[in-house]
Length: 101
Image 1: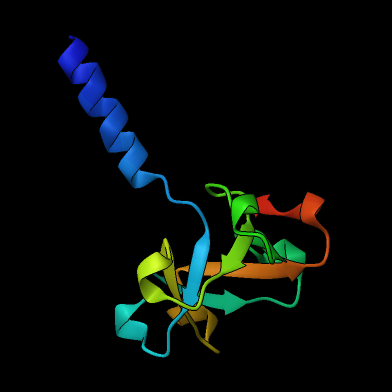
Image 2 (image 1 turned 90 degrees about the horizontal axis):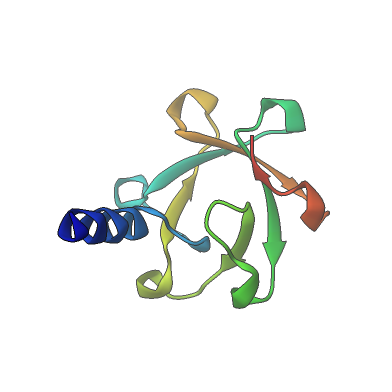
């Protein structure tokens, strides 16, 4: 039973990712294809951009942009078409609004 519990914890820890994000130029290498909405009500996630790596928490909506693809938890590609995206985001200026909807 302990082995199953340990395995479950390890599996869960591997599936939860922090939000250190790298912007890629290629849709094929992206983990998330993102469409930026004009309205908060359309978004799946409200994102606040931070300059501190330590503030990026799992699915918090607080994103830290990294310059290195290998350091990123998510590689993202921005699209102009809502139908192409698998995540719709709205960028906010307020950290308290950040998060999944």
